[in-house]
Length: 376
Ligand SMILES: *Cc1c(COP(=O)(O)O)cnc(C)c1O
Image (cartoon, rainbow, N blue to C red; front, side, top):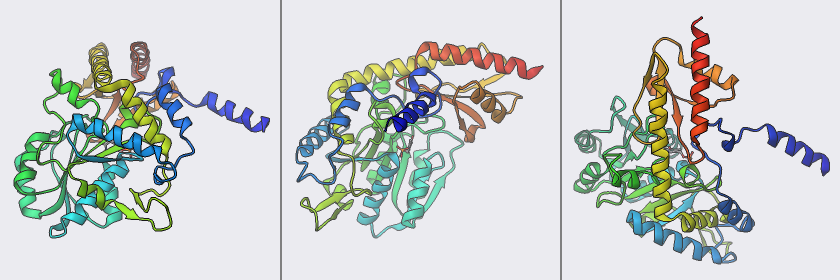
């Protein structure tokens, strides 16, 4: 065993860690110690079995009651991520809106997990061209009338640009046309309501009358260990659609794509929600957007960059002449990990809960060095 542990420690040491300040692209963060503690304490529990592990019902009920007080839904489910949440939203809508075409309408900025879900479920995704702008609600209406989709998906914080689609306006369209509307707020769900109230973003996120479901990842900006995402519904009936009878178990029904699922993830999410509260996430959102503007300002010190102003704490940028892939390669050699924003042919930096000012200062320094030496 000592040998195995030695190996574990060795590889742990060389694995990049958020708190060391090199991770600028991944939408993951270091989980909060309280969430880790809660997770470990309940690590043996199965969230699909709420009869044996009956205390999970308490955590579930309290978590979703509290979340829905703010977002305005009526029920919910803890899932393994935005991907599973998106899948389940489409599954629920497909089962309810049987009289519609086997089509999902979404802006072309929608997350790839929607394509994945339709690939598995055998539906077709029809995309509205947006040129990387928030979708035009009139276009959504036009597409709904033309294609009669069983669901429309829009995004609260796109992965590449941090765009927010006009949630209220599209909700009005969904309401008027009696269409299922899912808001994929995997990335932006914990940020948007606060940044809206403080005047940073144009659109709010909540259950307007036309919204049927909202997904929010806690393992992105919510400080929980992976996997943790929530899916909120406007009606109990939608949740029922993604729950299946499991005759051999005491609890009889299991919900979602997974069978056995981590009870620890549910408890960790409850703990962090209890600890941070609405106020805690408000402060975190403001800290992150302010850091994003700080980074935005500092990037301007570097000549010949095209820098996109942050909407949410995501900043895409590119060089006027130097190839984005080349810059990325050089950054990786210096242990600075950024992601790409292919739709803009740019790189992108995401400010996550772990990001500190001195991480940004170091990144700027590295970028300056790389771009200077490249020219020679
Ligand atoms: C991250 C993300 C997803 C996928 O979520 P996972 O938790 O990685 O499964 C879906 N949609 C959006 C907008 C995202 O940012």
